[in-house]
Image (tube, rainbow, N blue to C red; front, side, top):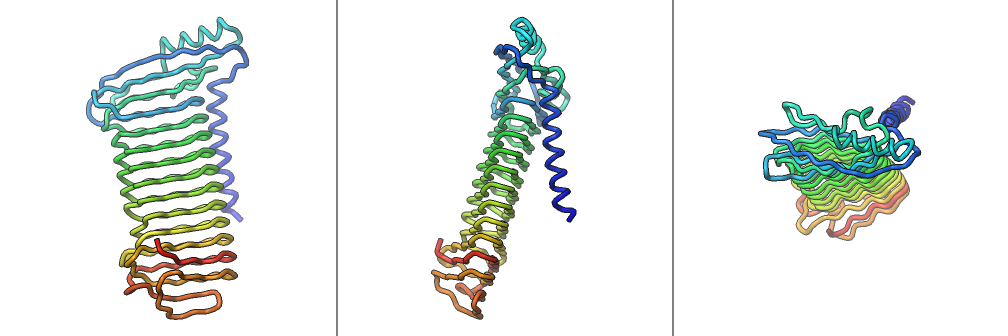
Length: 330
């Protein structure tokens, strides 16, 4: 009884926060004008970027000159043309960028940004960590050490070539990560989640989109409510759960690994490489269980199967309610 209410309240809180941010930024109905600003800041050692925007995209890439370069594309509006021009001039002359002993704070003065949106393009030294939020816009970070923490209420989130830990979340947008050096936590309420080539653990969650993970270097945990879960190239522990979608894990279960596949109203697929060795437990309440690779049956019922593949070793457990289970080569 309590869990759904908690989940709803958490979602509503996020939406309300985003709404408050947008109200602070303002949304005038008058004419709008465009402009831009550029600023460069000298930094040394580890640098922190704390950036937020009510409306506008954020892109951060690594640079090699020891400076942080901030470019902002502004769209300002007002009750009339003169008012809009004044708003634009105010922001160009005093952009929302503050240098601190740790790094830079960008776009945090929401009242200062009344009736304006700013799209940021930033270059930062490789030894930089990022905390970024956007109420309405995409966030992209690539080519830095990290860690990174990115959240968008309405927009996509993308991280690439990040050495440190990454936390990536969107309420209504896709979340993608590629060539990651540490743990990746990725989630979306209504968008696909994709993580490719992560050296650390991958933890992915979704409400109404698909999850795709390929080339994981360590453990995988993927949970979905109304979408598919697909894991390619698993060699360690793998968890793939969905309420109303298909689940699939393909790879080579190692001697100590555990694959856990569960779905209520979807199919489950296990793809195994040549030479794989594991024990299989498959159970389906009302679905078929098929194996298209050589297996040694230990116990078999109408909707259950225990078997050994190769010399055993790892464990693979698969459970469905109304879907079929299929074991095939990978």
